[in-house]
Length: 429
Ligand code: PLP
Image 1 (cartoon, helix red, strand yellow):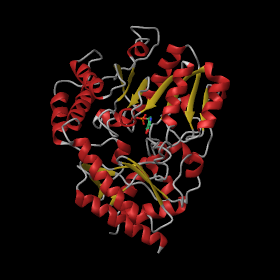
Image 2: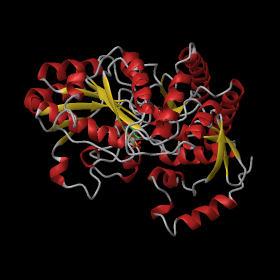
Image 3: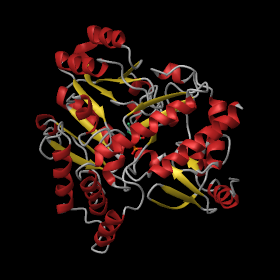
Image 4: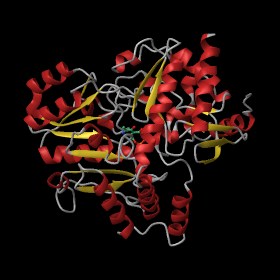
């Protein structure tokens, strides 16, 4: 398919006059893809339609938000009804408790939860709680994991930060960054060595249980359990950043999937049903340090917004119907098996965990950030541009994940396989 992009190009030219880089989040700019971004008009199920009228099968899912697909009729109907009754009160509403109960019912590690308006805020607040609870400062993270754009989390971070090639984003004081240690992912020796020397200073270890922001890089056997054991032994907290994996890897997220219970969990994306919601929760004794119960301050004018709560509640309710996760797992396994057979013929590898996957333009499956940095980014960009012409929309960066979702039909996934095959053959002949 030839891509008509006249309207997208015009929209971008207009946007860059008013918005830095024309976008409100850097990876949307398609900078590493070598073309201007597409502007979108609408979406339904797993099909996106851009402003030129081109349709794409969506594997990016708004960076992992739309596990149910776009514009699910039951979610849309509930949101419209809620909007008509007023959209914000700056005071509690029953919708917040309804969603809180649902989250606590689904995620085993969460006894109490607080809502915020983004994944960044969720992580920022969880780290503050961990520091307040332990009375310690040091935060341990892993190279290539992304936990939002709060100052102390932008050290050796993945996602769009990786594309800047900066160890630390300018604008973050070095003094702040000294409160964070970033270690290579999947390196048990480095973690043990840090705990042996500075274990008593560590407030928390934060990890994406399935890192997705350096592309999908699975944790090696025993790595997450090691983090659980060491944090327990040294009196530090373990935070699972489940902004991407929450309600995706299983009903109870990655913690349940791997059988490991963290002290705190951060959530985002799926939980808002397409609206700006984040959440953090965990052990009751830890969460009780939060104001107004305890001394650790955290707040938000639009936190727990009733429209967003309603969208989130109905999304989780629909995901929690019998068989949804089993069907998703079966569909993903079948699709990814076929995808692997295709990419095996090229110098490309597939990393996947559950319904999350990344095609790496690398001969070897990357196991950490350094290896991902060795990918052939030019060929990725060429592949990506070719794939768009085939009507398939992947996440536009080598450092990101793609997602099989509940709404993908077998037919759509077959078209994705055909598109990938053709795009690879353009690149490699
Ligand atoms: N944590 C993880 C694992 C993420 O993937 C992201 C965003 O992609 C965030 C935190 C930050 O979430 P938000 O973009 O909603 O601020």
